Image (spheres, rainbow, N blue to C red):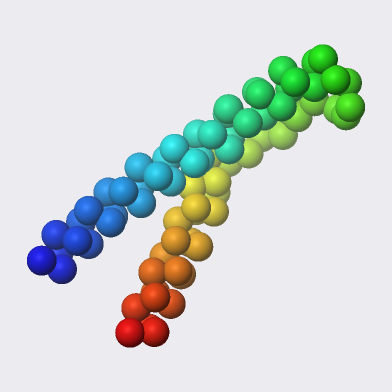
Length: 73
């Protein structure tokens, strides 16, 4: 049962990290630039954000929360 739970968590974590990474790297800057085109409140985003680093920004806190939750038991 624990192995099945670990597999489900791992798959969900990888899919969630990929989704978060995609949104953070591609969708949010694109949306920001589209809105900024109308509001002109600041410069457009032209940063190159690494996809893997943005995935790790999602994975690391999730794993830490899981570890802290298991320590409290």
